Image (cartoon, rainbow, N blue to C red; front, side):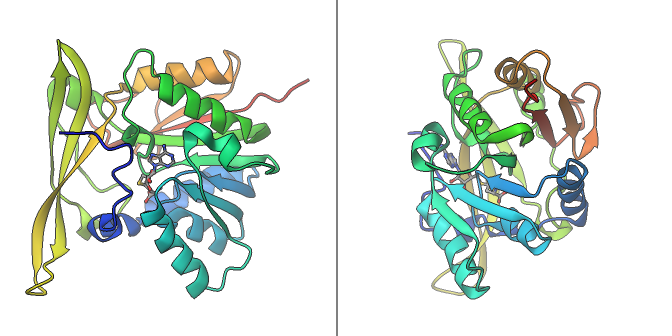
Length: 271
Ligand code: SAH
């Protein structure tokens, strides 16, 4: 299978991934809680997709700039902007790898978000993680001193180490959990990626009936500790850092029961 640079840049992506739009109350409360408790008001949603988190934050009084690489996702966000007459909502195409060129002349933000397990969709190889390093370095450039980067990803430890997918609804409403399977792809004994295969319910164009379609998303094979070490390296050894598992603070990543890890890392306040 060829790994496309961004599988979301597909006209059907929004339809196929529609259930992603339905966020759980627990998720919304957590997101707002992290941002409000850190006095964040000006937000860059760097993986906005259809704009689901951005719209929620705008509704709660935040000032949001949203970007994403995939036009297919952005066109949905833009149609929502128009429908809701949100003149001040900025929606831009930008790639994390070229963020400073794609979003020139923006005032720094209180928070940069990269949510929905988006970062793993940029397939990259540990331990170097050259592409992820570049993205995280770019996200940091958009933060005010003391600002925070909130970035999450699926628990891949369970898949890589035990071949098991922890699959529970944490982010989405209960009736939207697609079943998933995985395929860990190796070459010359080195893990190249994890293909995560979702059984999505889509409408059949001819019959109008629901049918199951398998959607494969290639993910970077990254362990939680590798990712947190990379964040700490980029933000500096003295940076403030917290790890959450399924929206609860964790001392160490519980790789057995967690569906998603959330990392919060702060740009050091300069003296
Ligand atoms: N945060 C949204 C979208 C998650 S889907 C949500 O939770 O619903 C992952 C998103 O990451 C997609 O919209 C995809 O286009 C975006 N993405 C993947 N690689 C990217 C890159 N290199 N630069 C910018 N966006 C990227």
